[in-house]
Length: 564
Image: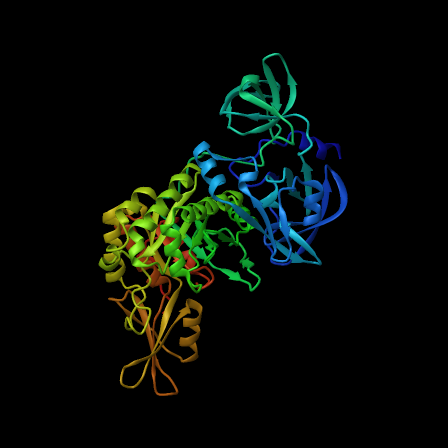
């Protein structure tokens, strides 16, 4: 018991680039609800917590009892915990970005879930806000409230410090602005302090502000540098399952594998006719599990383009400064709370007239503040064909974002366009070359599909049906009809063709490891940054291995075999 309590006494080098205060193990990545015990200041209490897919959930009653949660308005009817950023002591990168987020975000919310007979909230998303240090260990969660601690030191700048090593003076370090530590002892001019790992330092009193738990900030995210990724890497988008009560389910975080460097779950959607408000579907545990596996998380944010009225409202938001700023501020606030490494913007169905100015202004504002927070900013855009170059100011966008992901998998997608490959070499090379020429190949992540199109023709050769199918579904279709795909050099794919009982003909341009290797060979030859895959879960079991072999293990794409 004494050991557990002593851990709390040395807890606080807050994870100031993150949205929570924790260390030790990560909860298990299992979809089932697993009940775990709760300890407060080392003592087991009657409260219970649950883990689901890496998320730790505590009840609202537990949060209210031990955390500083009075600023929340809990609406269990719509499963949202509301708060206003302007009412809290929060810091984001610098004074300018802090003022921008706090003055524009307005009322935001964190999702509540109802299960096992109670209303619960993600502990990771609220811990720093509510001044609750926690750790998950040996199937239990240990809570250490610090709202009532009498003396806490906070670095008010990047404070020079001298470390201790085995009781002796060690090396010089910096305590980042906003770092909180506890006092071991003090003299007239110096403090001896401890951080969460138990490391001791000497710091000047002039560099530290003494506060109490009541007056310490609700949230701090310092300015930081962006992550550096490998010369070539792979991003994978992931959809979320939306529910009728405006909640969602994110799938399990993928296990560690060479083929995934960045996950981009679709987590934030512009609320149509919502004045710039964002629908929050984020899950802190997903981020934590990805990080544990060495995978970055770039939350995908979109304009809710599948919703009725999205196009008209997106135009209104992009051309109204107050709405635009609110959307940007909320995207940034949620990105910080859920500890993501970047944002991927996927705005579709926009009116052509607002793209060049309104959309570009929106991205500039997002990148200006997001970059200071260490967020990698990337965009999903149409392929840079001559048509889309008339509307997207790729040159200007390329100056302010880190990556652009052209959706080069939309070459043939409907009866109106005509039958063909979703992504043939002449198409993807010409459009990607064009974008690389404008912004530089090191900023391009070429979109590649984990799906294809099913085409059906009548005896006269007219298209009578067309729809998207996953890679697994395409494999099932050709197996059911005993079809043998044939390699087509121009398409860079196998093509399967077979007769149907109704007399029509089905045709599928297949995606498999060999066709993917053709695309990856191009990325190597063209010197672009990597790839962006739509969408996780639609790939065959071994498809991600192809990216790992080419990008990480140095296997030549030409040596990747196909299925046939």
